[in-house]
Length: 349
Image (cartoon, rainbow, N blue to C red; front, side):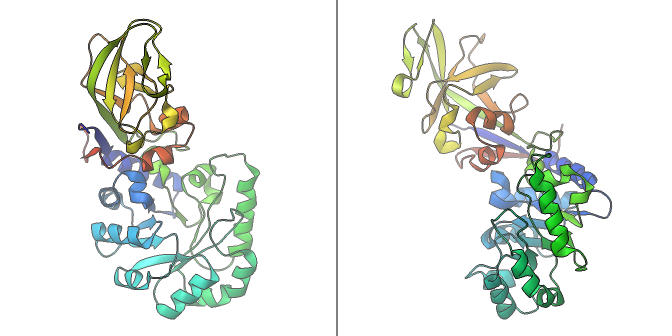
């Protein structure tokens, strides 16, 4: 594929972290979520930028992700593993000083037996029914675990991106019922929870998508831009079709640009005949089907054919592109393909 360029603004990520840290309020520590390779943007570079901004605690999904972040950061910062202490992870957790968030009685037993005295946290299920100890389990083991000294007790909100959803208050109440009086640091809020207000913040917040410019942090700095090279152009006569299944037909004379990116590069097929690309501030519609390596774009209205077209940038955010695709910005970001040349901006101007 020709050289498509994904530009990642590390300064914007740092600014977003600082803004979310201020929103979290005084006395509340703000972590950084860098799971899934920092939402597809490069966990090592992003974690270092967040550490320089002031973050001292990080969250990843798996121990292997924690190993990559530890390699990038070195000793010191706390790296928390959301999947907990999985079979086969003991040596990695010990050697790299990783902190698992224990999610089940099985994990609790594994950790306390294999690594007595090693740091850990506990995740509680307050209604999402995904990970964590349920109320009865927590009540049974809390006295033992609290004595062992977990670094934090956490839970996760299911509907924080919908501020008026009744599930938010139900989970908040359940979290209080499960943790009030335990004398340990507590964490409930990711980005959406931060936006819900101080009653959700407790001792530690865990912003993820907001760091990378996504909803519901609507005032976030733009983090990513993606410029795609134009490989070829052709003139299409009225009535001629473009692409697989003849899914688009020219109503008049048209100039069609073939652009180097497709669903193998993280552009969902659902963008077919729906998305826009941009030549500076001029929108250009994607026409026809998204194929594996290529898309086709109507550039008839441009004064000249550009060398590249932007599908992410100042005029189209990951959320905008996700809306066109019928998905969410998380999926757009984490799907951005390995064939893009990644360019990092550390200072603006």
